[in-house]
Image (cartoon, rainbow, N blue to C red; front, side, top):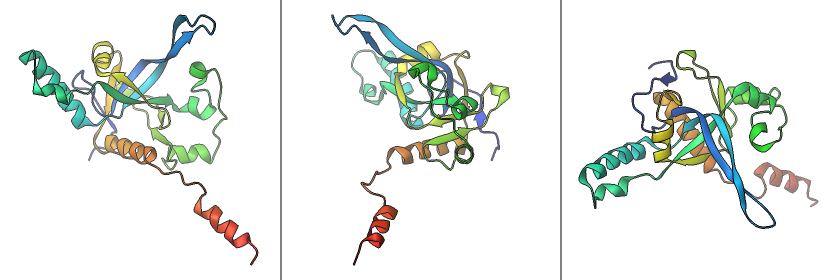
Length: 209
């Protein structure tokens, strides 16, 4: 098994673990509160983002689009098309550590992540974050995924606007790609109980007989 976490991109279609750079995300519409008119579109450019959608779905989507174009008109392949792709921002590690990674998008800083918090992130011992090492040969920087921050883009947009070497720079390989997928799914499916068990235990212990 290779100890390199990244591999070159072989095609322009979206694929699981693909790493894009300079991806524009639409935050919303700037609406005038008085006349409800639209003044403009608020957007933010994510320096890097990683595809989280399943590879089997993206492969079927690509084949379905090709089949539909060839067949024309009605086609059973259309049922396999994926309208949008799920991505997660990959924040540059030092900016996330300093709390400046979302400053441009939301106009605020978050508290600096000091040790041991950041050390846990680097070791992937924090459920919310996933650390990715840098890889200079493919221009991948050291970065961190925040699983609370995910978004979608139309599949056509990724192909037409970002399916080139200026944006699509690399792909997570093998187990490294599967690790991100598994950790994201685990974080998203977590269950928040009303009161943690250790707190319930503390309350029971402290209750008078």
